[in-house]
Length: 226
Image 1 (cartoon, rainbow, N blue to C red):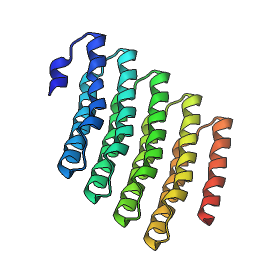
Image 2: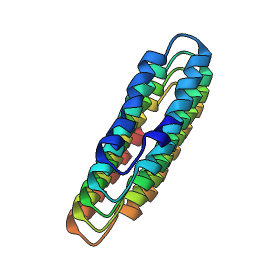
Image 3: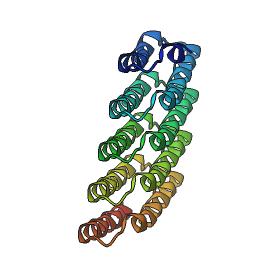
Image 4: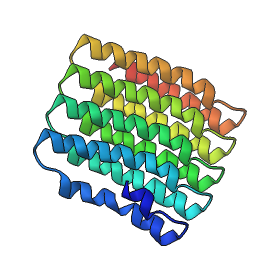
């Protein structure tokens, strides 16, 4: 609630609004209720990003930095409880939706969005455990990220390169997601099929992009052997 009170048109106040995320580490203890309050606080912070955002490039930069801090805080929130694991995965899904709000016409903003997606892929390693339900949520998150590539895509060659790099990172993540269970293996193969479909979106008349798409197909085929 205080974030709304603190906010005005000045740059400095907007910066102060981003600082409360740091307090989450202080607030956290071993009790489940406190962990729940921390995750609720993170959700409110994500909603506040829409209020904080304006046409200023600096404010957009602070918003993306805030999301990065939120991703790091998820590691603090994580424990062995299944409910907490569920809340963490829900938070990551909300962040993917926020990328659409953060995205603007500027090339720098598009770059920050793709970097945020890369951070989310790394966070999946933290979310992963031996539970079958958590494995399912991780694979669903990867599918949402593939859909987000459509939003990030534009006519710029640099953005096309970043999109193809993101897909390569996702292919590598499948090795982490792969487990001994038959159901997990099935979901991994389904993810690979979705990636093949995504190549149609990435494809354009540029020779370089065509080459990258072809290379991605080779990587995908190699991954299916594992």
